[in-house]
Image (cartoon, rainbow, N blue to C red):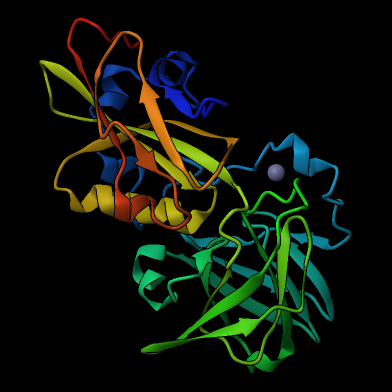
Length: 306
Ligand SMILES: [Zn+2]
């Protein structure tokens, strides 16, 4: 957990009960492609976690929108059937759709690693980036989309600035939002393609996720990769892509969304002492898969897993 003194303690992370099945010889031998695969179709691992930020809860009203459950067309893709004019919230992703008539909407999580290059220097991701389509009629029936964002708005003294990045073929536009709440950014749909909320507010903390992956195949030592990411699906997908492209096998052994991350440096400490590289890692929204991670190495005798 990130602490007030800006240090993380790896023993805090790995000593806690692991979510889902415990790490046994069976699960330990599964490669990352099995548990964190791109399109494996299995749903054994939920890759997005609701933020437990106590500070924000007071500001978040429970939405009055009709909840709809989508069908999953792949690990990162969803299809929802909206019955008629109204405002609907997807129970799996938190996306909210306002439609003028019945519509079927298909949407998939994109990785920020593919769209980061379209962001001007002063802008940062503020949530997931999506590919949204109306599949059974003209897209003009979809009037507004409310994107979940990852900013912590508990400290209102920060100046806030949201927009939406709209990627079209080989270029992207920054389009204005309509409104925002403690949890969502509302955008008027003119045309559809790749869209996601962004922010210029560099100092506002993000609801964060700490993800720990264990490298497979070492007999003599344990090697972990510890990522600090904004808590959104596109960042987690970017991390998955990076791990898959490393040529090594990883399993995801711990995830936490119970933290707030600020734009500054963090250190990771371990008990017992492990080899931690780098000594200090800067958190920046959208950069988890681009700027690296803590690599932590323990000798064989130190770590115990059950
Ligand atoms: Zn918060």
